Length: 156
Image 1 (cartoon, rainbow, N blue to C red):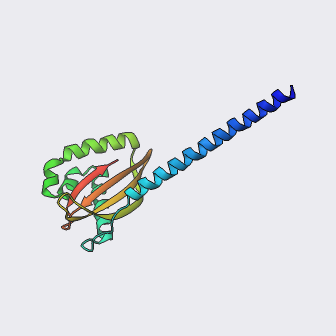
Image 2 (cartoon, rainbow, N blue to C red):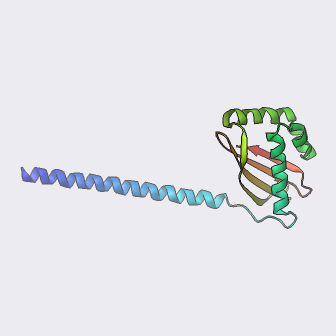
Image 3 (cartoon, rainbow, N blue to C red):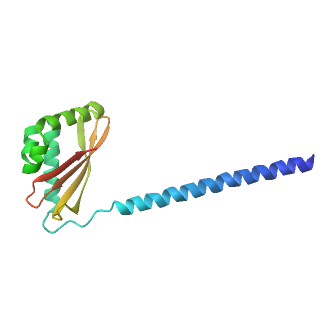
């Protein structure tokens, strides 16, 4: 009987060891994947053609217009191509969805600016603004060309 109990204990230890090793390997794979994702998402240096503070201020201005319901004013900040693609009505519908899910705008949580190249290879600046709402946060990504016209706008 002792042998059976000892065998059972050894089997349990091996089973636990297997689970621990399995969890360790899983965690290592998750950490490696996370590191690869972070390396792939790293931004590039902002071009000397842009002033980081001006880009942040311009992005905040656009978001301020949206959160105040001033959709035409936000569209006026866009370049011609973007104005043709994105109307005040579309902005209004998107913001109504955001505020319906997240509540009223509260404050800006964080702001950062990185450099990027557009589809034609021209330098542009991308502001990533995290804003707090009553029931959560939203991330606004706003892109600008060298003339400081808004050329991209995403809300997540």
